[in-house]
Image 1: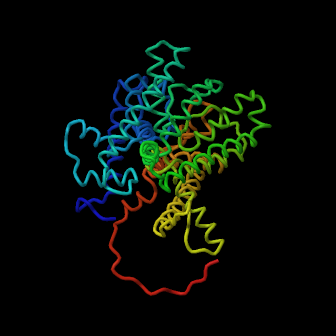
Image 2: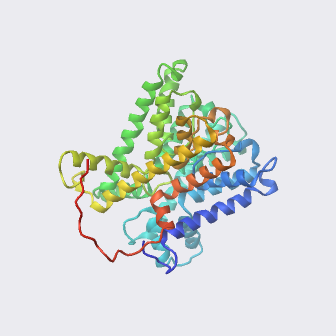
Image 3: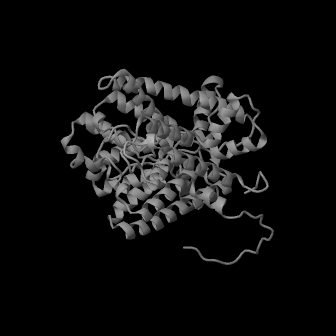
Length: 444
């Protein structure tokens, strides 16, 4: 990748920025007034990484082990991590009246997957307005819901914390059971799901939808793919979870709770991490299907993780194209460039390779069961935060040994940045000066 500074590539700058924010968060969480009974360096680092990478895996009980100050630190880390440190630094620069230079514009383009530098600053301004408007509305609705159980001040603090956590697909909660106690509350469930979807659909998509409404412009191919695939995954996922658990976990719930829980489980598996059901009680086939949803994740340029909906779609359509003996991968009557097809295949391969290797290593250390271990690893890689240990108020990772926790910390960072971005940052990029002749090779 071309180096913009002469020394660091854009990928290296992004990695350095996230590591810097995580380090700052670790220091803040280790302050005496951040926790009720103190915290180790490793647990502070884990919590900071989980917040900045908007994952939600916890090794400390957020409402019990952190003070109000500590909870605010976590909330701010989630906001910075969800939008990206480049986006937040750009916002501060705009508020200060500072001019945004070419390097900053290039970094914004890279971090938000924008296709052009044209209108980047205008796009950022619209994005900030959209983000804070949605989070404010989420705060008001959730705050009103929580007033039934808490004082007005507590209710609206819970409202803003959960609104930011939901929109940024973080999954941190100020309740020890996540949102299990509100499993039957339609307004809360719909609001949280709405925030998760809006945060995970991508800012480019939302901007394109607004342009379509205002100027009657044709939707981009990217927007069409994201909307259609998101719709299929949400409702198709809910149906599969419902049928898998209808005679098991859902057998003791009312029809209303079952429908809400199925839909919520499908939405939250796409990198959000809140839970209204106990994942330690689910069937193996449900856990495996949830792993698939977690790997796919949200959409590009969003607050969510995973390999992204567009990557998944391009790979599937390329397989279908190859099976049919056609050359071009076409989606919605538009050809997908070969370089993007190759990129999608590389991202998919790296994700599967990384998750498999890490699962084997952690399972060899912890012996928690292969499917269980893979669930935790994929949850970290997809920046989801779901855990088969959620029923006990902490993620299963809380009981892992030091080496396994460090591996999970690295996995959360790899998942947030993307395996391709991270490997490009670690490996020196060189321009290809020699092109070798084609060889003869048999495939399949």
